Image 1 (spheres, rainbow, N blue to C red):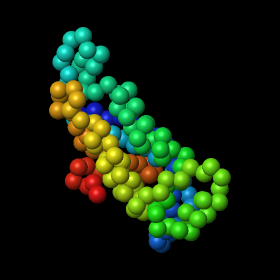
Image 2 (tube, rainbow, N blue to C red):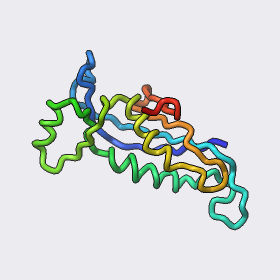
Image 3 (cartoon, helix red, strand yellow):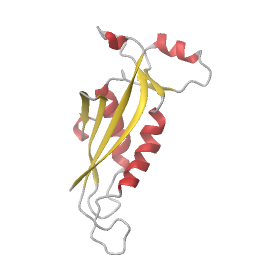
Image 4 (cartoon, helix red, strand yellow):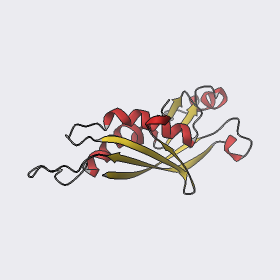
Length: 150
């Protein structure tokens, strides 16, 4: 069985070497979809009876490790010194420095790598993270799976 939990957050970024508008500072309303696979828990009396994993637990993990960290932050590539220097002049600015350019593809891979060890078979149902989908816009997204992690 496969389940998916959708979460949204806002963040800014830029792609410094892009040949179009994305080279400028801008932001997105990102959507993060976390897809888990596993068996349906068949244990009467358990709060998660009939579920792969309680959707509130899926959300709680993603909120703590991805959404609360990236929401209303500027996601900046470590080598983008112009932007990093500028952001450092803003008092208490929420900046997340990344080792890669913050494209949808790289953000999806990072999210998968962070979340993969957190969604594991703790429930006796072979639970595992199957895919992270990150929408940069309603029409553009990237899917990351175990084969795509850095």
